[in-house]
Length: 278
Image 1 (cartoon, rainbow, N blue to C red):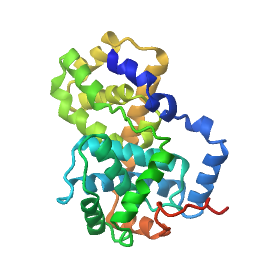
Image 2: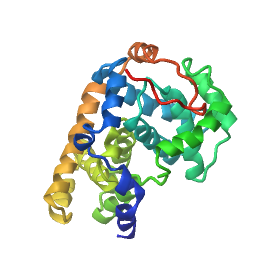
Image 3: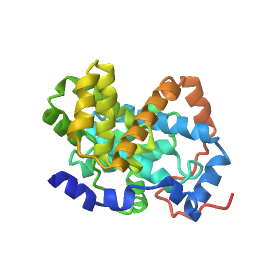
């Protein structure tokens, strides 16, 4: 209960649970969408977002870096928050990904050396080749500003473990854990509380691990839910299943083509002029 109370009072909940339907009319959001659409289709933006979650994961697992999954998850949330109000046209996502990983490592108390993050970035991205260690370090403060200095992130992993041990459903833990890892390929972390994502992961995992009856009785009989939260669980399940259907097998050529469409803007630590109009 304490963790959930903390979540509801946190900046994650108060500032960074967004409603895209409400936000889409804001000037910032409209400008971002226009700038994105000047270089990518909406479909390509979705594919790029899936790629970026995998890119941060590869960066974090690179032999120069080797950080914990939690650092990778926090960095991916930072990236999602950054691009909620900013366009891929103005900031190269591979540089933002590396900066987010560097910042997340400090926030999660497993600090990485920036030169190692820069070396890993150079190794796995031919597009970010012109960015160096200074660009990551200088970009950190700019990234924090764009995150509104809200750096504490609540993840679905903890509620997942609590629910599974309460319900005696430990048999689905590894499948549910993988589903949560994959949930970072979408912007679910910007729209739904972590416990909703955890429950959706358990429901899907139960179906795949042939524990549907046990999971279903836990979900329908033991969880006290208001209808709105029940609906949110369904929405998260649908979004995850659609992602597996449509975006789980992105070809390297497809990603290559997308990345070729992105400009190579100046590093983010430079004195930033406001982006020009489209």
